Amino acid sequence: MFIHHSPFWLRAFFPGFTWRVPTNEKKLFITFDDGPIPDVTEFVLETLKEFNAKATFFCIGDNVRKYPDIFQRVLESGHSVGNHTFNHMNGWKTEDDIYFDNIKKCDGQLNLQTILFRPPYGRIKKTQSKKVLENRQIVMWDVLSGDFSTELSPEKCLKKSIQYSRNGSIVLFHDSLKASKNMQYTLPRYLAHFSQKGYTFESLPMQ
Image 1 (tube, helix red, strand yellow):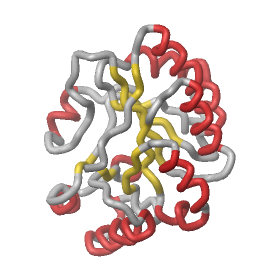
Image 2 (image 1 turned 90 degrees about the vertical axis):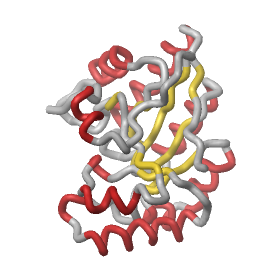
Image 3 (image 1 turned 90 degrees about the horizontal axis):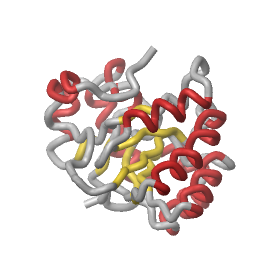
């Protein structure tokens, strides 16, 4: 079980992290974790294009290494990217030096300037976050779609994602095989719903 909306107490406990973008404008910030991979990331790119939407992709460095052409498509489509470690490391289970080295390895694979970082699973020790925040922005989320959950139906994934979204929400989807069924159902319907309400979809700035 998980919480679709990041509660106030959680955001207050990690005040240095970015959970949403303060704005009164009808803007949403769609993000994707764990790509790029064939087919799934390509579906995302085509769907975003259909709705003239920009997004932010938190990429696993090893996937960028394996699928450089798809990563290049992400960039050429005008989306922003962030570091998601090279091997999708769980900070709670990883020694600090190893964690930092893995982030740097991902930097080298991305081969571009971005301050955006999202810890895999949202799990990062305070000792790790303190150092990371020295020159990066740790981006969490306001809305967790839950597309990765095998216990969540596509319909409920869509319903909860819509229910908790608000102006400035950072919304988390996954361009991964595990999440593909729910994500491919939810994403186009989510974008259509908020497009009809006059929302725009923007990427997070990399600098």
